[in-house]
Length: 91
Image (cartoon, rainbow, N blue to C red; front, side, top):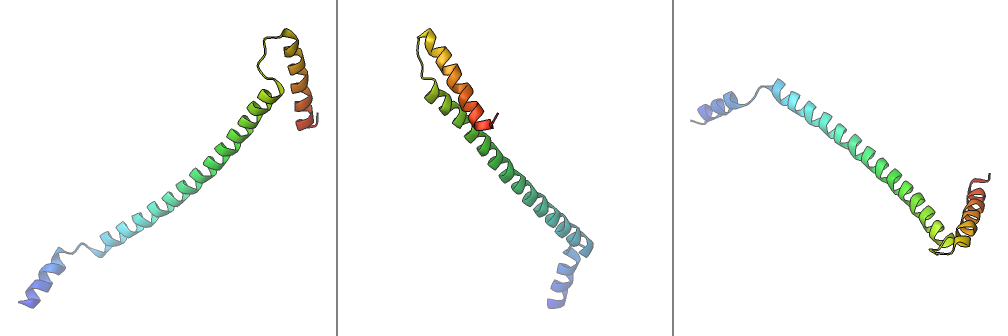
């Protein structure tokens, strides 16, 4: 009885080649997932950096050029922004 049970289990088992192919595909998918996660982390860091730069520029603009209805304020603001830009870029 035991021998028949073992034989039936052995015949139901998939071929070794099939198991090896599935294992290889699993490893390839794991590598692909790791690469995708690294790329995602890199892109998120870059996005965060650009957001920080953009927000810093917006904040600086608000500090240097507060909202005002005075026409003379536009000239002063433009001048301050130019000086600030020159100081940041060294040009």
